[in-house]
Image 1: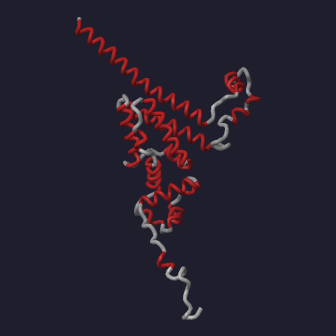
Image 2 (image 1 turned 30 degrees about the vertical axis):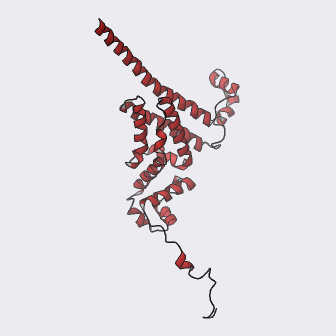
Image 3 (image 1 turned 60 degrees about the vertical axis):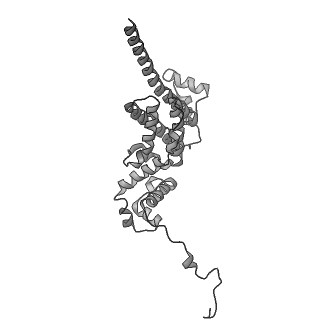
Length: 249
């Protein structure tokens, strides 16, 4: 190419037109870390690998997140913040609230299946990560539970849903397969005197799939929480009637 040869218009100044790289920030780091976990699993996450993904020196990450533990806490936070807080503002019936919230949480966890083992063992450690729990606690208390009961209900609720989804996504045959395939394979080797109930259940052949089992357990939880409120209301009604009768006497 001679000095008089001009580049095509599409080539001239291409470097100057390249959009500036997004500045490094805590949000950008956490978003990249969660994406890495979503696509490749927790085992793939390291500060060095994350830095390479971001195109930065590993030491730059430590300015925003001082260690690997802080990064893991931030991933837990990110998944929790994926929960729409408004989803906990459901109709006042407690059982409807629990069922609707459970379905929302399950959907979020299924979007981040590789992060579920981390969520199952790592407690919420940042104020931002607790925002959805606070919203749900408020809804539970408005529906009739005491604050202490509400906190316990959230613990039971989240444990059930996390374990249910974890079982589904880690099942060897895949999340869309029969969760009881291994039990069915044992059918011929089961002894009628030792396992009569399992044999009968397998003979009927209509065991639930993952979705049905989740809905069964979720509705059972919802009814249980609602019964706590109903029992207290009934007890309070008996007390009020007793007081009324004493006043009339």
